[in-house]
Amino acid sequence: MIGDKDLISIQQARILAENAIEAGKKLAALPQENLDSIVEAMADAVETHAQSLAVMCHEESDCGRWQDKMAKNLFVCRRVRQSLRGMRCVGYLGGQEQEGVYDVGVPLGVIVALCPVTSPVSTAIYNVLLAIKSGNAIIFSLQPRAVDSMRHALDIMIAAGQAHGLPEGAISYLDIVAKSGTEELMRHPGVALVMVTGVLGMFEAARASGKPLIYGGTGNGPVFIERSADIPAAVEHIIASKTFDNGLAPSAEQCVIVDGCVERQTRRAFQDKGAYFMSEAEAQALSRVLFHEDGRRHRNMVGQSAEALATKAGFSIPADTKVLMAERKYVTGEDPYVRELLSPVLGYYVEPDWMHACEKCVELLLQERHAQTLAIHSRDEEVIRQFALKKPVARLLVNTGAAFGGMGLTTNLTPAMTQGSGIAGYGITSDNISPMNLIYRRKIGYGVRDLAQLADFTAPSAPGGGATGNEQNFDLLRRVLREALGALPQAR
Image (cartoon, rainbow, N blue to C red; front, side, top):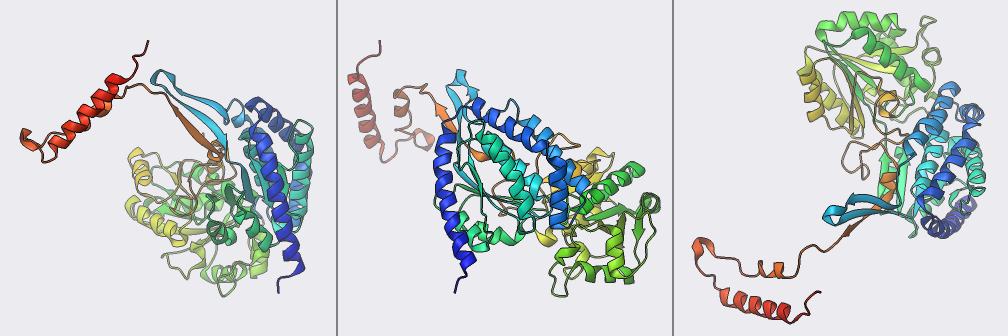
């Protein structure tokens, strides 16, 4: 029998969806300028709480670092908001008027959003700004390990938005968090789109809802250090990226592939920057800390520091250790270090040249089939080009830390907390998600040619100039068309 919690969650999902549908109609009637004013007010309001929300989220989820969670909150409130200014999402979008063609932006309607335990508050803030900017209502199924912090952040934004004209019900969330309620939300006929960020466990349910799906996954993204790279700079970028929020960033590196001729120099650089190379016995002990025997992840080990992980695994590391390195030779499904680790731990491979490294990257990317980012450190443009052409991945990042480059902090990619998957079938786009992914583009086309053009396509010539068997029929149709056109009143 279905439990009371499930029944309440299902009922609330239906109520929230119906309210959001009505709110969405009111939002769709607002001009871009009004939507922009609401977005600015909400971002201003939640930015003042960036630190307290980060601390609250860290304490509730028990993973990552609150300082880095605050950085994510501020990144959304500042960099993402800046990228939205001046962007037109609804109404007239421009086009080629001289050709008689232009676009109109139309909101999708109601969006259902799921946020990851890795960045629940910053992703929720980001989703709200994108949805309202594009005139859509949005409903959240709260992350079970961050219910209170997400609720607090959303309440701040709802209050600020309603004070500036946001319709009631345009932003809402399930108070009773249950899988049954989330599935009911996604299946509701009034819902136009589902956004799932880093919640792989709900991916199949989201796809089964039959709604268009934007899926922002993580995955086992590798980084290749090629022989022409600035080795110290590459290692510094990788260490900073992998330690950011204790390895929870969606595009962060999961393993390193090193060009063999610079391996010794690279290893020394990693050690100088705080990497500890584990023995095989230590690597095996750590794998048992990260994963159950049946392959399930130990949830309470996600986003823990290198020191905490080593202590739990029963071995000692130097006090200044930032990242744990596990040396590997082969890519096999049984090896836990080919998986997404969500912690400051890196697999470490050595290959004789870039071509072998290229093959290794492909093996790693296909292992879990939903990696979205690959990084390369190199000054050889031809090698970089070959990696760009051949990898089954959404984005290739060059000479930057993947955590920061993927989210658009150190690159000119769209600033985003949701980065689309690179594998076909995992969502409808591989973009860094912006408000432009949350609208229909209505195409407007003016007539520029008259009906006489139709006659040119009704009597194709036979090969070699001979008549076709149906030429008499085509001649008859052409005469009828010409007579009909001749009978039409002439334009004045």
